[in-house]
Image (tube, rainbow, N blue to C red; front, side, top):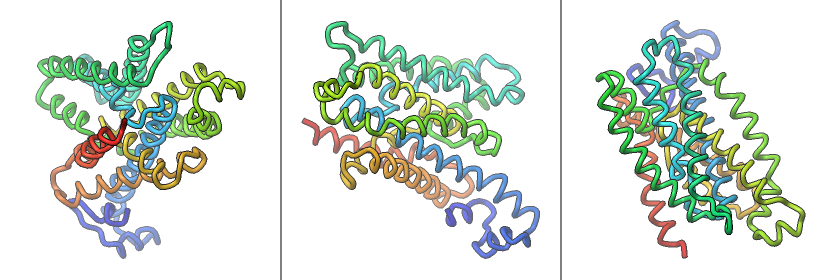
Length: 311
């Protein structure tokens, strides 16, 4: 956080930041720190935490270590909604706060489509079928987004491409206040279901013997994870792999108990996203490098590693 606050076109030393906290800094320094850099750090920490526990829930409920919100078409569905908003809404500045809502709606619709195509009456929804359906639909969504870019102006095209690459754009206190209610409600709900999540590791038969309706709980938990991920990517852009990497790392470090695993996953998600944002600012202080690209540099090889280890 200290490095991140001190990195950018205007360098502000840790001593100057301390003076700001003591009320002795300049107006320019105060504006840069409290109106630009601090909100970005808060968004990064919250989004990293949210995407991590959303990925954890999806992996636990599907019993698939390769499941992630980005592979289920959630990010792509939100991306299409964002592109439609940019292409169709004329006065975007006046309706800017509709953009996260549109992204959330797109994520939810995409998830319903994935569930619909993955469901079979005899076997219900299996994790492999859901994952493959999500990957296939993500490819379809990518093709549609390429077509939609033909209708965008150069400025809107640049914004959409940065959003899809995972550029954190909702960096103001207003967006944080809009995001917080969703984050708090979904996070508290998921943490209240830790024991239910533990039963998914025991298998369906054991869970049913304990009186737990797995079908109902699976749908509710995945819905909460989708809402959390959809709201997150709506202000952070199309960031993937956070929900894939952190649950697997936390399980290796601390085991399968969700009372410990969820917390560690969230902390790792916050750290990974903030580290990626900091590295991007250090590499180039004048041109923003989308954090989604830097996370993908780590996430893609790790996904291949998990794929090779999975039987």
